[in-house]
Length: 138
Image (cartoon, rainbow, N blue to C red; front, side, top):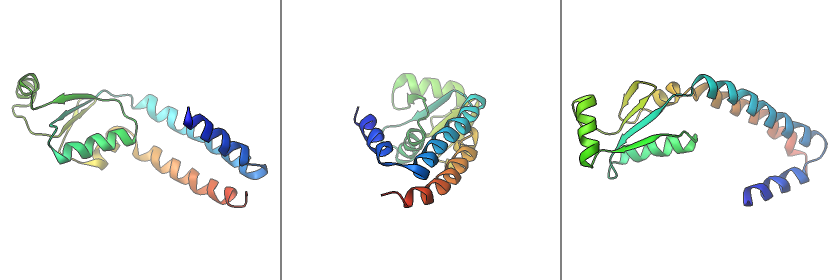
């Protein structure tokens, strides 16, 4: 609810070029991200341990990009037996993205497999174009 109010306040302050730029930005984001999500809708499974700092980094990365994932806790008996049968060991973090396995914290590889690198570049380019248009708006 608070986000909706904040968005309304933001758009109510915009006029002229700033408003046009904001709508163009929103439209381009939805167009740019929709194909990337459709082409890269892969299942994600994270094998993790609650005490592992690298696992926390992977969870944070996935959360930052709002990626849905299944979490398998390697410290439980069922998690350990699943990992042993699939991989032969219980090393964490292990992220399985559409069948590809990433061992450890490799943010660029994870983003590549999730098709996030190109989309984030497009979004940053769009943001760079919109900011100067908003700067003149008071």
